Amino acid sequence: MLIENDDFKFNGYSIFPISSILKIRNNDYDKYFDFIMDNEQLKHEIRISYPINLESWAEIFESIKKAGLTCYVENENYKEYFFAISKIEKIKRKNLYVRNFDPSGLIDSEPTKINYKNISIIGFDDNYTNTMSRYATERL
Image (cartoon, rainbow, N blue to C red):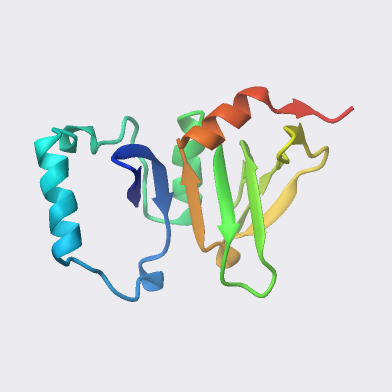
């Protein structure tokens, strides 16, 4: 699990399998960024306000649902790319069900089944997801 940072502002969390990490970089640019984070006193903002159990996809989604958060689920690597953004409807052992909402804020009338094996990354508590979810409405 990582906290996202964009232009020295924290913007949500991402969770992905450790197996998807090919390389970890820590060069002079990263060290300089760390230096700035220290001097700007921003490191104290590296925290999470709710517990997220990272034992399995099911536990992660249970934690997100319990916290009342909307999340996005993405498959970047699989032959059939998908992106869904939604509150979590139902969590099972091998999959979950979500009712995605589109960029115009319309929520799908039927839940979509997402198999955990097809997930490459999930994210939550970012500005876009939090803001859009406040305005999402049911399709008429």
